[in-house]
Amino acid sequence: GQASAGHPAGGRLTAQRMIDAIEGNGPSHPGFRRAHSKGMCVEGVFRGNGAGTALSSARVFVQPEVPVLGRLSIAGGDPHAADAQARVRSMALLLRSDDGQQWRTAMNSFPFFAVSTPAGFQAQTLASRPDPATGKPDPAKMAAFLKQYPQARKFMQWARSAPWSNSWTNTRYNSVNAFRFIAADGRVRHVRWSMRPQAAFEPLDARQREQADADFLAEDLQARLAQGPLRWDLVLTVAAPGDPVDDPAQPWPEQQREQVLAGTLELTGAGPQADGACRDVNYDPLILPTGIAASDDPILAARSAVYSQSFNRREREIARGRAPEASGRGGVQ
Image (tube, rainbow, N blue to C red; front, side, top):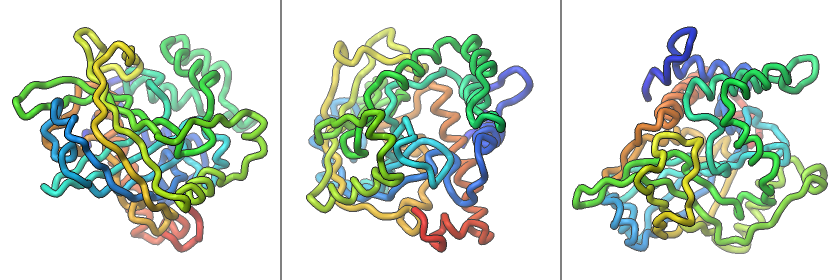
């Protein structure tokens, strides 16, 4: 990953400093991911229908079945967090096509980021740090952050008002960042994508969240898989001229944009992450196959660098025997 993730006032903002800030927002959990710490490994296949080849030469869009190793998770750095407390859910996938190439993607349930730059993300992380006295962020620090980054109010409005789903399986997951898709003829277009569930959306209201089991998402996932495969449709949304392709805080008007249904993800199995195949995967969003490339979105470059920094710290902790829970010797997912 890239070492630098922007240059805010006060010096160079590195991935190391960003991870330090994330770690500072809660107790240490050696061996676990620094963000989205709690999750489940999943596996299945992606079946491209060929339509994606209009935008990209990547093999995944034409290979009949591409094996998928994935992870479903909730936001936050606590691997023991109650599922109903997490506003954001995530889906990370590794698709390995038969030409040996990989497409790794880390998608989120929110439709846009709160901020446009790594410096803004760092400011958001620091402003969100719980006050030891109250266990909640300091309102004065949050107000100062919002004064400096007023666009974050739009994200906070989403977090307050958008309905919660009652399952990982009926949640839509978004790339949020844009990527360059390169077709076989060399034409380049900017694309954002989403995995749209075939399962019908079911809300989870505030009362249900209060009563939900701490691990209800994992329990629900296993119960639904016992009934059969779970499916999402991969939809590619193509930028129009003038769309902000390097600002993930600015959504595109999807209904007025070209959209391509490129195939279907089918998940058939799930298991604990402690001893699962996804545990040691870095879902770096810049590990991309020929036919897909990074955009100039600075948040995308920062995510790649931060994921690598987090991965390296986790691997060191596991290798040194400091992470019995995370490495399957503590019986925790």
